[in-house]
Image 1 (cartoon, rainbow, N blue to C red):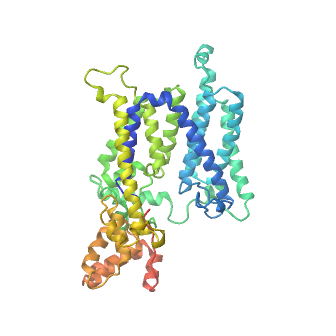
Image 2 (cartoon, rainbow, N blue to C red):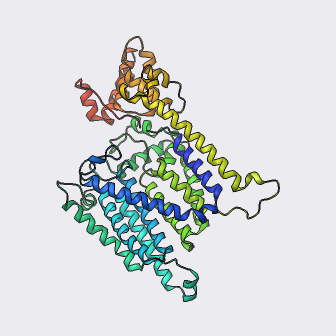
Image 3 (tube, one colour):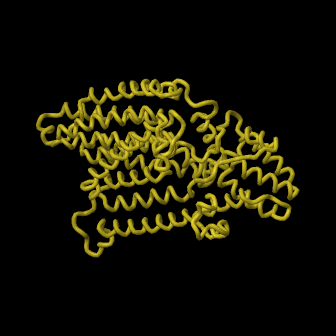
Length: 482
């Protein structure tokens, strides 16, 4: 679990740096962005296919080797992998529309087929929605191009998408790949067709998750539960119906997440402001290829944000900021007297320098704090001894340090009061079985038997399997913060 302040800070810093450059990014950086997205997408597609068929082991530690039938490249999970593939597909369409060379367009056919193959291997339903959206919008634009008068088409230069029927053919090709991939696997794997038929197991569905989140919003509609408090709110609330069985860090829907943590007024204000800016920009009237690519990439991230939380991860934050920079209104052509410090040529380097300084410090702090979670022989020499004591100097990752101290320290009558206070704080950071057990044990030693019983009951409801192991005297494991 990353520091809670990091996603909004990085988004804000990236957007600031990108939008300061403004139209300059749109003029000079569209080709670089498209090439970067397509290259990253194709490399990830190859890694994902190797993972899907269990052939990625020789590439560790440069990538991961998940179970057979799992494909996500180096992006942690399949929905993020699918979103990268979707962004790469948008980039491929931009290259096709702006590069008239026949050889380039023939090469793009192979690249597109590889991207479709990887999208099917991801078995991501989010990726399928993104593909349908991209194909639908691109087909409509291509149809509009071919209906335009000859003079307008000539004025459009080389901007020309593939024929609508060719674009629409990507959908049946995707489903053909989705059927074929599991047939070629060495063992039984979960294919896309099976995922669409069966859905998520038990109470792990988004409908159950969103129902729980709506219940939490109804309890505190105006102020919310506080930034970063969703996991604790979910653990501490006893629902009347089905309960999402995992630790709930995010609402898997950006408007709902803002509402449950900041309150409905804040969510409506923030989401309404973005919706107003999109409507004011009228992307449906856009014809500039660079801006259309930016809208397409933003659309993939926005769709993913309605089903999960891509903006909590650096790669998507960076692309999000760059696309906003491409779409931002151009700065004045001539500097105004006495206002040079406001010009993009001045603000962009300053914003970039500040962002690099902040990220550099955060990186250094993260490296030294992460030493607590490494075996002694893998730590940096300066942190082999008294690692926890040295890590306590951190203020960016103080909660990760608290978590490590709590899980590494046994509860005794002598330290019960301090451990109880530490466990209460850490419960708001990561309400998982190991933390709950320490809170119950310290409460019992302090004579707070009612509190201990109440926490044990919440433990039983939230994590029945871990509770059963605890009652049986077996070790209770949990996740480590990332």
